[in-house]
Image 1 (cartoon, rainbow, N blue to C red):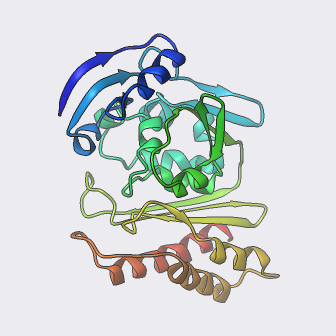
Image 2 (cartoon, helix red, strand yellow):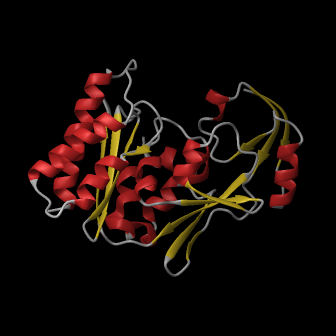
Image 3 (tube, rainbow, N blue to C red):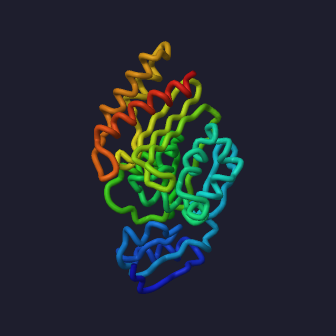
Length: 264
């Protein structure tokens, strides 16, 4: 990757103004996937000195700075208590500690990577994104957004929940990208279901969750039907690592198992 200029702004305004100067100006967060996605950069804007690396207790919410590393999240007691440690379950399976010490939550979210293991649990936790200047949206809306957003992601905000959760990553080896990942959250017998690496970006299985949430009684048949509906409502494709049919089989199997686990 070729970089013409490097900038380390002291304020968000300085970073934002620089970002708008050219479509070839790029933000640097963790930077682990930047080389793969951008062959050349006019100005690389390093966000390291903007104080965006904190995890804060906001009462009913946890506020996570975009420059917080995945390792910080993995070890933080606030994050460990969110939905039975759902985020930690996902992060702990991402490559190794050295990688997680560099990768940031903001870079992972803003990249909207189809292989992301962190987007899937964040979706079922109803994560909200905060951008500079003055813009907020749900993670789901951000993932559905077309084109580039010329704003700077500053924080991820998650409501504190203490329900049950399930996360499954299917991979060939420990350091591989996922063939598929599945996250399910439960609170007061209401569930949210998300599937990622289909190989498209993570998405909610809303019809499947609606079936479960409207059921008068949670039976084995309801869980099986919901897993089938999820496979039908989401789009699956083939890639070099797995076929469409295999991904559908995995999704159906692990959604069923996850529902049985969180609704036991």
